[in-house]
Every structure is written in structure tokens, then in C-alpha cells.
Image (cartoon, rainbow, N blue to C red; front, side, top):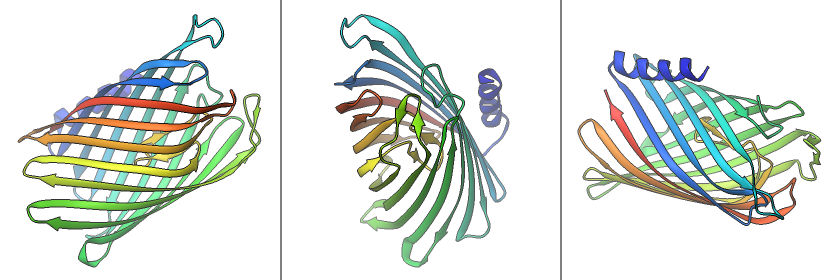
Length: 281
């Protein structure tokens, strides 16, 4: 499946114009986790626009080293693969309809073989304002997760800089009782977020944050999902890059703090530093 997916991504970008391919590689570091120590992450995304439509494909692979909490000796490495598919259709200049799908492969978690389905729409209003609505259902073996997103955004200009600010609300409901041997105590979550992106003379960057507890969250318009029973509390993000004619280079940093629920481990930090390239065809 992975070979077919990656071949499709490369073919999509090399055979057609109006295409993009993004490659991202990074390092993960955990602090105070029960078993996780550090790891590597790799992601490749491709998109192709034709007429009023845009199709996107993505593949992500994560390998995380783990150790026994008492002996500190190595134990089974966590291997995760995720495949995502997206489709956007511009009904007109204001309205865009969206659909998304994610498939999860995990060698350790009960959410292995999970599937995430998404539908949504965004509408541009006068003076740079807009609104987006997305609905996701995550289908796991022992439980499901329903998520409802509302995003309000505003594009703006500041001297020679162009920017966009977004305010996000996510409502999450867990339908089921168990994650492996762990029994859910809370099944309803609501989190808010804010993102700011800027472009200035070929340079671009962004900052963002999420506040409020959340779990099994679908992110980035249905392209990513956090499928482990980790009750996130705080998330901060930072990115910076430079545009060239057919190539962008960029770096990203993210910090998350939360609780590993099955292990009953509080104050677990995850830091990710990654570097990427975006090619335009």
C-alpha cells in the first residue's frame, strides 16, 4: 500500500502542472513520558489543482524509541504510518466544499487500522473575512470519535506584508468506553485555537496555539490525527521559511503538553523540530 501511495504522489506532481509536493523530516523528543524517549518523523504531501478541483495525497511515518519505565532498557519501538486523501471543489469564488480521509497503521496502539472521514466547507465573506465548518468521524475498533470544527478567519495587509489570522473551535465527543484496557472517564472535550500567518518579501512564517483539553484530535483540515489516548492540554507552534521561484524551504517547531491516560502519567511534553521543502511544478 505504501509503495502504491508514494508512486501515486510522485506521478501526480511530475506528470501534471499546477502541482506541489512537500517533504518534511523531523526529530521528536519526549519528556516525562512513561515509555517514549525520542523518535523520527517523515512526511510527504502532494496536491494537484485542475479546473475547480484540488486533489491531495499524503503519507506520514513515525518511529519512536521506547524504554521500560523501571529498568530503562529498550522495549518495542513504536511504528506508525498514516495515509491521507483530500478533495476540494470550488463551487464559486466564495464557496469551497471539502472531503478528507485518513488511514492509520500502528504496531502497538488499539487504534491500529483506524479510519477518519471528514466533510466540510469554507465561505469567503467581504473585506477578507471568512468562515469554515468541518465535521469528522474517527472509526476505531472499540470506539468512535465525532469532531465538529468552526473556524473564523480574516485576511489582511500590513504595509508590504500579507497575513491571515484564524480563530478555531473544536468540539470532540467519544462514543465508546474503552481504549484497550483503559476506560474513558471523560468523553466530551472542547478546545480553542488561534493561528497567525504572514508573508513578507519572499519570507513567510506563522505562530499558533491551542488551549483546553482535547483528545483524538483531527488537525490541519483533515490531514492529521492524534490517535493515541493522550489528553492534550497546551499546544504551541512556530514556523519560518523562504520562498524562491519554484521552491520553498522552511522549518517548524511544535510543543505539546498533556497526560498519557492509560499510563496515568501527567505533565508529558512532546517537542518536534522539522525541516521541509516545497516544490511547485
